[in-house]
Picture (cartoon, one colour):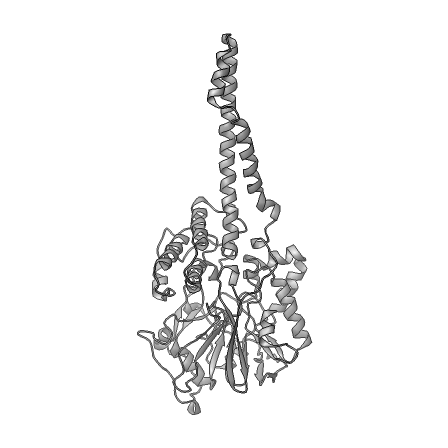
Length: 494
């Protein structure tokens, strides 16, 4: 609702959303139903693209399916999945901007290649459709070493469609080990695509930004940013403390408008049951009371009682009774320690919120639970700046940004939680900005063994040699010219 306050009412303002309407939040179904109702009411000026989270795999792995089951029924969830399968993958705005959730693909050379994709199904783990939803710009975008700095000619003499040469493929696209799938695309790849298709820039989402947006290196041909990232979810997962931003395009002028988060009704993380969550707290208090009752008599008081006991049998009975009390105290003490551990885990779940790898840390083994406790301790520390806090959380949350493994797959690849916690601690001690791992460094880490087993660790990406595109139905890309739709029909080629 804050977004529409900043951008204007949908009744007189055209909107194009870039995807990820459901993720790890607590109001995904309300968000989706509201956006769908606006699309129905303003069908010619309100547009929704598909994001990587609009799929069965991620909504089942994270919280949206659970949210639908808690608030409604699984029938509502299935209806949402069918609607997600119909969302477009990309849009052309004012014949100048390619709008997409993730980015480019080595299999997409022209806009016609996007039109020929069959989008009406669950996104695969590789291929052009996957890349449009999952790819990212290279971390050193515009300053890549050993790659082409520019593959472009003037826009008036754009080259005809060609397939990227294998010798340049490694320069234009790099394996994306951060996501566990798809690619990093370089400055050269984007400029080549812009020139070939005679457009001005690529606008995408997919990555959290501390100030809500990021404008990348300008195209030498136009002087306009070749790539723009927008992120419109303030205080992402209730822990990032980031700003959100929208881009307003009017009269050939681009304006970025930022906004902060608004208060929302409280939900326990991952829709946990409040009774189950609170049991460790109640149990710990009850055990404290029992311990105080059992310790009501001190050793000195018991010794005074012993002086008045003359019979040997009475003394033996008293010793047995005292030993029974000691045993009960030890037993209650052990239970109290267990409840204390469970209480601390429940507190960590609330602190980590969307970063938790499970509804409850009780399901995790001892090693992972201790790492989660360390992560929670980092988040409880008061950071010197919002940017520092953002950098810490982003490192801890990397594992959740990867494509999740299939439910029956073993977890491999990527840095362990302990490594991410160590790096987050280093951020706290240094004022230097944290950069995302380069592809080569991440790939080297993937090959190492002894990686911590964790449910959110993803599997290795599919090799590019396995990627092939087959003929598919033709679907036009929605075009927005001055905020109005110029393409409303869909044709299918048999």
